[in-house]
Image (cartoon, rainbow, N blue to C red; front, side, top):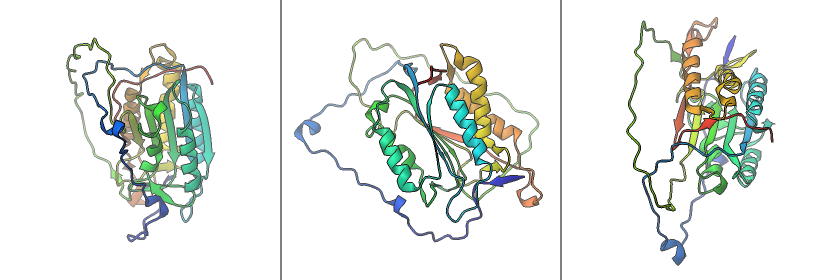
Length: 307
């Protein structure tokens, strides 16, 4: 039987919790800061650097969430994604049932580490969720709290490196219904020719939110499905795609384009899964994973030596 990661919402007037509070940013007022010169320039670098290590991968797994249904089957997801990330050489650190305060402290501490020799940073969260929020053991918090500590203005050693976030959680209380079709056409597009190379090295600025990717298990406002015995559609498919890549293209020096792998996950979940439940209201429903990307280059995922 399939299960969803979030029970039916009962209250529309939810009280504001501590995680809603944000810290106001202050602008430096020193003369040197105000007189600095920020330069923008054309760029021809189209691939992220190949570093010695894969990087740190955090897993936040939640089976028991206060006032919510137990997330049966999540251990399968935790163990599968841990195994997949280890096969790429990531420094995998898995945590279960952390409170919001514990998550905040953990993320801040990891953001203070030196990531300069790492390809990227990975964070996987598996929990209940709602629109714009995900749950810790004790409370909900805005999803942006997951990546704020790792943005360019907060974690300098991850500047110009991919920050990858995978979120297995509901994002609303709607069900994705099936749409029938008989055929489809593959769309192609031509890339514009690269700009002329820059011969003079220049120090330049990029947005603090650059080089980030957030991969959601489901579309905004929709449920995310999890089988109580085999795990969630999204995480299990992601692991299968990663495992296959680790044995093939990702094991080669050139690696494999991450976005191509994630698009494969989208396709497999969208085409190959649908709910099979006795309740007609929940039966034959679909799920559409999707990712938001500010990656500025191609990220070639490679199998790296274990740390």
